[in-house]
Image (cartoon, rainbow, N blue to C red; front, side, top):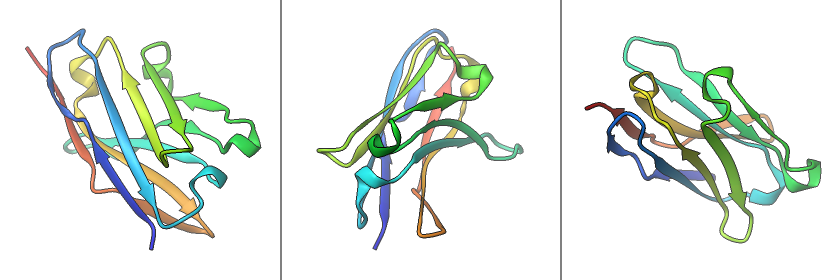
Length: 118
């Protein structure tokens, strides 16, 4: 049974940093692309960052608004994917969700709230 559990969210001032974690279980973590999405109130869910399997090169991709500020990474020994977020802005306020697609089925974590406010 695939499970994704996010943690690390919280309240941070503009310009601050947070590191989100997503602990995965129930599948061969190292074989799959992992993604971070976010959803702000009243807005559509949007893809933030992607990291492929190390067998596919472990390449990363980011939405334009977070490039240079966010870094996605993975530790395949801990079955965990991370999102390091620096220089946070109020527009980054959202619920951040971990995602993977295993055998054609999408799986989501419960999300972790990130609030950027002074």
